Length: 293
Image (tube, rainbow, N blue to C red):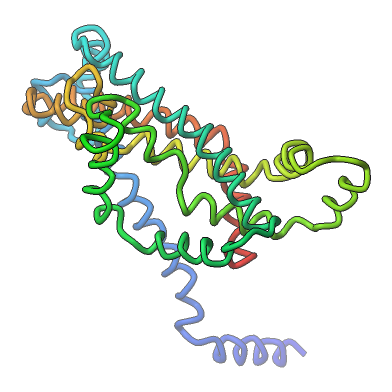
């Protein structure tokens, strides 16, 4: 009996190829290596921002020794424009986060539930607009915001107005609203609710996950936006934080520890928001993937 068991285990071991035995450790090794490569730039930024300016290239390179918080203190106390840049970025990101989420939800609901002339044509045009690179429309957007129509150059509204809604946001909400059963709305209409009541008191509460995800995408994108603010903003007092850091880098290009400290100030809100809402973010991405949106 024992001899039979040994022979059976030997046969099974023989049938398992060397690739089947090694593929799991191999893939884990690749994932660990990729994770290290992805985290390394951020980790080094933190380390260099915590070292004195004069010691930034001293060994050890991978540990903040000597350790100091002076770079962060200098950013806050010695550079007069930094609080203003932080405030401008907050205004733009929060305002667009709220307004774009609402407008995209309203547009998505119209495409998903309402019937109106040219609906299919408009939806197709919106999908086509998603395929056009943003750089192609920069000149026309500049003419509309600037000298031809609104005359808002060097004003925060020049950053806000073009981003009030996006085709991606409308498309995302349209696909989500299509997944909500129509029976819920019909029951509400039978109870006497009108269109606005159904949308604000029934549809939006059911869409929290998608709305939070869209809001997170919006906040992240607008907080880190650089190209469009660079085109329409001119004076340092109107700069957003990413644009201000670039200007700051040009004037103090050799103080990398301070520059990295300022960059981490820029990344900090995104990190906090992600950890606060990661459950909604991951849930929405997983649901979206299952539905093939």
